[in-house]
Image (tube, rainbow, N blue to C red):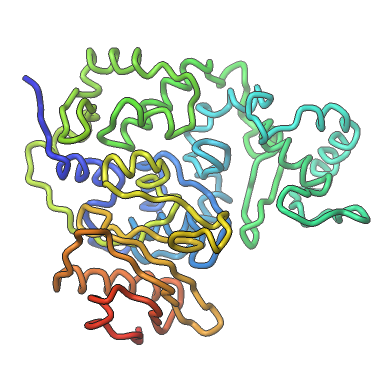
Length: 401
């Protein structure tokens, strides 16, 4: 019998799989952070810090208040590792075998690996590896730029290029973040028991497992959404779906406006219960719920793009705009900045999506979500500059926390 779902049901299933359907009912524990990353499979890294940096924000939107140092602890103790997945990501340690084939063929990694650079500077690279072996982990900041070095995003000094190349090739691993700067050490020291001959997976098997992780973390998905989660190219999605359907791993469903979709078997209990979406949170631009902009549009009718690399005059919204999740729907966005010295969260502007009805519940939930977000970052006050007229008429311009 064919299963038909409403768009609201589909959204709820996806948000449940992502840990965003309901707020956490207790104070977060360190193990919750690890389980949260496992639930998402990947935690994308970005360094922009006008508010909390993206990985911390993604965790906060799911866990609530937690010590941000837990993320560094998880990395430093080897429970997470860093590598290229969706983009640069924190990944559960047990999934290292899934990405190892990429490290062994770094030439396929595009701009992330410069083979010509590595080939022509073999002696410098060997000296750098010997230095790390003898003197311990290093940062790019430990090495001076040569005289006359240009500044700029891609004008990396030689040692920075070496470190990035060696990281992509899996010769170096990130063992900690110091002021959010990568600290690199030899893979052999981080994973002394690892043996490629014994532990590495064939690419075909690794891709199969990444597709499975993607299906589980999405909960419900169109076939077209699956490969993007790990940025897989030429992934055998059609063949994998046929195998999963036969095994009962996924169940075909028909979703209002979306058409043919697939439900991961772990979400089958959601069909038996009347799920209520009760969570309100500010999402990172790099949250898995919105990092696939086409999926966000199709599933949530939310047209979104990151504009921090767009010239200011051409931005539709703002530099680092946070989607607003409210009880199962993406109902707005806000452009915020944490003024750390003044301990003020500044909301430059807030927008609601067309057709969103301003209710007492929405106002209460949104104000509480903004306050939680601000308080977690050490703010003592929220200051709002530009609001929709309907909100400006009833909301204060600022409030103390």
